[in-house]
Length: 197
Picture (cartoon, helix red, strand yellow):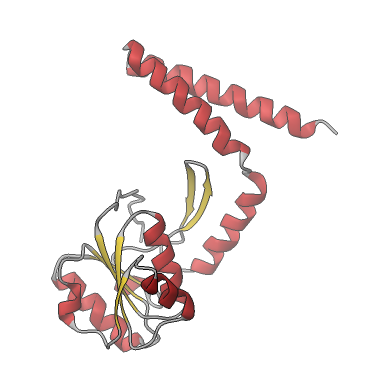
């Protein structure tokens, strides 16, 4: 089933991760990287998560999941090693109208984490709508061989040019045409430089 690709500004928003293993740790890092306020609930935590908690980067409750743990969170991630617990978390979150990602059974949730490639402010997200996250990671890694750091630099250049056009008050259709033309030019120059032995 198709999903709506959507970037959400989660800075300062509360997210709950249930589970303390390696998969939970990856979701924690994604959420923290996006600026979310993260809480974790798990009977045990990996050393990496424990270090984040000790540093005050996030809060942890070293216990088993309770429905009340969802309170005040806009997003929950069910990342335990128990499918039954993950389904319970998903059902509880859905009942509250929350976003819920379920790591071992994505179809139980209503959102998922794409495999993400970052080049400066450029983000390329690859999703399989939860059908095969491993394949999304392989595609992302392939794209990383094609889309280098220079793409982030091109974006930074275009962002400055866009800001100038906006300040001048030009019509948005004109701005889009100019910026797309400029983007094609910069990418063509990049391609030409790569072809030089």
